Amino acid sequence: MSATSTSYTPMNRQVPWSKIASYAFLLLLAVVYLGPILMLVNTSLKTTPSFMRDATSVASELNFENFAEAWEKANFPRYLLNSAIYTVSATAIYVVTAVFVAFPISRGYVKYSGLVLTLYVIALFLPPALIPQFQLILRLGLYNNPIGYILLFIVNPIGIVILVNYIKTVPKELDEAAALDGCGYFRFVWSVVLPLVRPALATVVVLHAIGIWNEIILPTIYLTNKDYYPITRGLIVFQGVYGSDWPVLAAAVLMLTFPMVILFLFLQRYIVSGLTAGSVKG
Amino acid sequence: MTYHFGRGRSRWLPYLLLLPGIVAYFVVALGPSLATTLFSFTDASGLPGAPVNWVGLANYNEFLFLGQAARDNLDAVGRTLIFMFFVTTIQFALGLLVAVILNQKLRGRNFFRTLYFMPVILGAVIQGLIWSLFLYPLGGPLAKFLEIFGARSEFLGGPPTEAFAWVIVVQIWANMGTTMIIFLAGLQTISEEYYEAARIDGANNWQVFRNVTWPLLTPSVNTNLLLNVIGSLQAWQLFLILLGYRNGTQVLGYLIYAVGFGQTSGSVTSSFRQGYAAAASIVLFLMVLVIGLAVQYFLRRREMRLMG
Image (cartoon, rainbow over all chains, first blue to last red; front, side, top):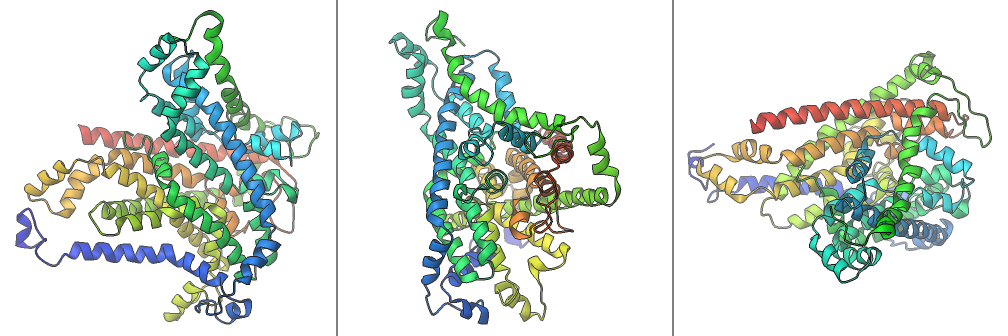
């Protein structure tokens, strides 16, 4: 280090090397993150012969037909509707039940609250439930059945832990005051607690819904009827048929990527707070 | 805690309303998870109505010791550990470096944060397909890049080791954002005063990082290390999308799925060997447990040393 580094504003008046290095690194990494997306956009606008001739040349032909073709042949409307049904219904069931689990645990209104919470916390470390879960659904006669598929997604232990922690920030005096005013337990949780924990609830909803929407393993295991496929499975099937026709496949992938990216820009803060919940305290 | 919402029969209302959620958790998740142990001692298949018999330790014996298949299984275990090692170390280091850089006052830092974090929302299918295209071997962008140096590669279609390495790359690309975000959250809790004090004492950038940032970042370090280790031991979705079930590339999670649900390869469909797959699940669980606890122990000791 130079002699000036002993003073406490070491490099400000010289060439800001550390800033230049920072930007160089960030831009290099940005190429790795943007590159694959740009390739996707570019390919989706090319004709197949043009892609075969030169995969990376800039799409001058702007061939939007790929999108129409993909939309129709990939059976998108059906699969998107299925995905939406699974995501919305499972998330709704989960969130409603989760609040009535998290609130009494957080307050200690039920016996063994601590133990119950531990059962949710250890879920991260437990063996995969895959095999017995399959046996259960099979024996219930819910294999290859949308109801059975939705059933798989009505639990999410991490969401419970996030809610329990957040409910602790709701003052306990509120319970007493509400009860004195003659407010019942159900109404209190539903119309007082629920609005107050909305930020945490939004986080839990967003994380859970994204997980269902993106799931690929479970639909592959549980759903054999094409009419029940969610969009993830539909896309893989489409890839199986059109795998070599990259422009059309790229259009299909892009049509699903684009809304997700837009959604991400709006939901980012909920995802961030979900992922960082508890991590700062340890 | 005192309960204010009535006595007698109405005292049971919280229990009643808690029931649906708890029952669902026990039936759908916790119960099946624990039952994996029981199934690992049976010859359960995936056929409805087929009898299930106890077979003792036969599944474990077969998985670990019987012939070529057992050697392949142990290779998959080894590969799982290699995958974990590279994903954890690179993702951890990269996430930390990016977070430290983006914690400075830089123009456009929100753009970079959003960009690096974005893949986490896309899910394995889109992540995988985007990279399949990016790694297109016949004149795709990376193929062209290699051409400059006179090199060429089949990427995902290449030799198993190379294909495996590309899955590691995509896995890190997809999840580095989460590590970065957790580090950024940790960095923002460190008070500016500590940095100023260190600067006044004449510390350079490296010394500030080593003696201020790194120890104060302990909670995020712990979270990230544990999440990365456990996450990468259990992750295999990208193998499914990028490679399929290909010899020389399988990790344990994929193997469990393949033997349990008869998808070992595209053309040959083996039977559903669910008891055997359950035994493999327990092997994976023990790996997660042992490595997870070892990491915990190591982190505790480190924390004591820093505090002491």
